[in-house]
Length: 446
Image (cartoon, rainbow, N blue to C red; front, side):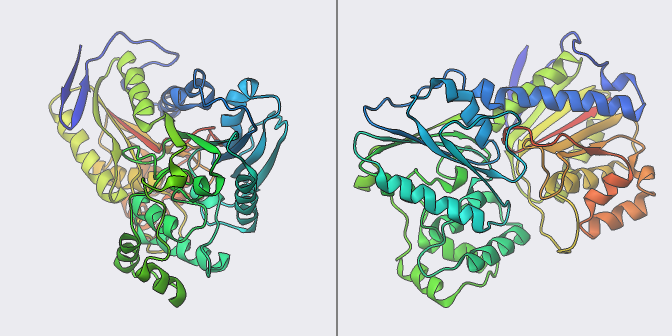
């Protein structure tokens, strides 16, 4: 039986199945971690391109089909449809360094590996190649864009009058500010020559079609990869307001262009965007639902807290810990499942940690070693922030493995949550996953 309670979704448990015993049946950290990692992998399955793109179609054209695949899943998305592309299809693949899918053969497509989350020259050169390719397309052609998380940083094309170094500086400031992704992408769109629908405008009169894996809370398709082929509803005024909100310094010329509206993005009535279409093939909700099913099959009641949670990671960790404690006091055996993209306002620029480890460490401190509560938090792309871990595990004895509550709190205050979990041997290491549908957090109670 499944029933809905706003804003939570509840699933009743079913008979256990799967390779590991339910986590409540063991206190061994290694067994707990094995169970949790397996559930994480099950949750990712529907969001992997090979599954999510199996039946997708795109417009057929009499002319050329040019592929532009950008993001952390760029090579995997091409591989998922490569056997269905026209033989003459060519294109460009831009992905994060180290994210090229093992064994992938690009065919007529060039691969460029670039920097994330701060853009670099390789990404900037790739953006110019993409714009030049768009310029060459005619009315019988199709620009097929495959978009996944990380694309905003991987395909930078600074607006006229802005240097890449200035774009990098603004990106760093946004990353440190704790701004949510939709605010970051509003700014990115207005400081770009390719984002916010501008790529589709350059490709016109060719048709454009974007297939996207959503890493945006709420699945606003215009925000995925900062929407290079999607009309933009945000404005220069909004971008300026966000910049002022976080006290981010801008070059005077760019400030003036934003204030005057010269950097406005193409809107829905722009004639050059009337042949642009887009669709989402995988969403955070798909991953959360799969996690819920896996937990349910292991004998847990499931409470779905939402797939688009945002806000401060530390606050979220404390809130979820209190929910877990309250449910334990009621004697319930429950899995708390949530997705979304929390933020961290960085106080120590030299700290090591991501939003998932920060969330989980705040959660662990609030639980204070409470028995029979464990879980994990992980980014679905396999990398939490800029480190090499997907996320981390939590079990009752983890604070002691960090040296006790005092040292654990100090790790958190210095933005060193990665180091805390590294010390406790609690990091979840997977390598690049091949998809990106935001973070997954699961707490098991009882």
